Image (cartoon, rainbow, N blue to C red; front, side):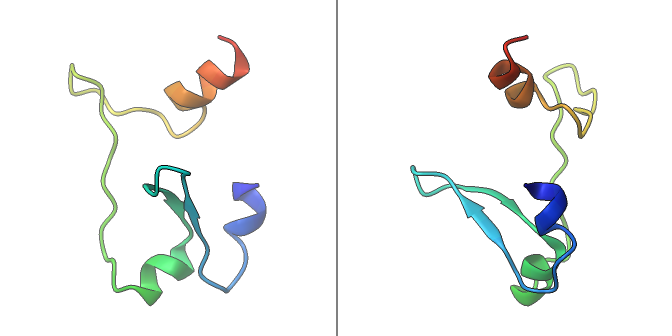
Length: 62
């Protein structure tokens, strides 16, 4: 779904049922004046690779 959303010009933000923001495409970030994204890191300070993230691995059953 993210691959589809990333290419559209309209701002799209995915919100979790607990009302936390899960993901936003570049158009949404620009629309809201966000000029930086945070970088997810493990406790040992290694950068978490974009695909698959730990939560995606859990969902996949790894």
